[in-house]
Image (tube, rainbow, N blue to C red; front, side, top):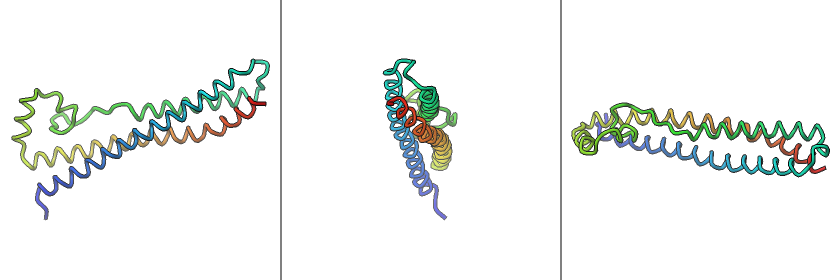
Length: 163
């Protein structure tokens, strides 16, 4: 059986991997928002280039469907990037809890923590950050699905608006 110090090292490694997943979700959101914003801009520009009497009802329909789909994708992407600051109240690791301590008090508590207490704190962080990563990727997934869906009416709208 491994000792607590070895378990703590493994827990720290898992925590770092979870933090990596969180960062990966944030990167994906940045790309999704950039593409969605560009698509929305092209759509708005193309739509506004035509007078109302020059737009067919089909072009207007696909433009509205595409715009709504893109906006939904952007909203879901925004949900993925909202900060998740709720963590264990007494943590010596989670930034929100650490910041609530006065620095000398925090240093004293950290130095007096046992290996078992640090292991437990780290494992709680692993779990909390896994929840955060899962939640972010759920929003990212929803955003990407709406982005991919929006391409169909977007292409149709542009094709009809160019005619």
